[in-house]
Image (cartoon, rainbow, N blue to C red):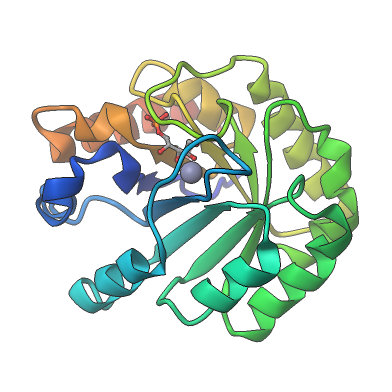
Length: 232
Ligand code: DX5
Ligand code: ZN
């Protein structure tokens, strides 16, 4: 069985905000995507960045795949701010405005971007079922959204497995992303559960050598998949 390669999306929330560009450069291009967490202080109890950072990142790294994770509850406002911010993909939370989810995902795609739908650890996977055919990415939060540096909730691995089964059963093609608490010691379990895109913030950026740390995470995934006979 041929398996898709696992992608790595370091989260700049884990970087020192005063040295964000240097932190990204310290990855030496080993990343696949750059993950940008947007928090509105209401959907989650924290504030982070805004569209000006997405724009600045796009200017600085014209070819980067910028993965914007919106942890906000005013989706209409957020979309008006982010659709032309340079994002490559925009992920919104299913909990934010459930009645708007389908329309919001369509707007993202109509703007020529990839669209993702996220669920927090307390939200049933079931809520994503109606949109599985119109997303490019399903994001399984492996911590409570809002803060970097938390420990991964092991039970969320089951939700990744479930989304992988739903994808196979429904003939869908979305990628499954896991976000929160991932590091070199648990990333193999995430990949084995079916995670296609690994987000990691503090583990990567608090390492003295972020590029090497990322390589270490990649090797752990490669080894685990090869041992399980599903390596690419
Ligand atoms: C948490 C954010 C994550 C965060 C991950 O709400 O969505 O993307 O940056 O950080 P770590 O890897 O430190 O858990
Ligand atoms: Zn995130």
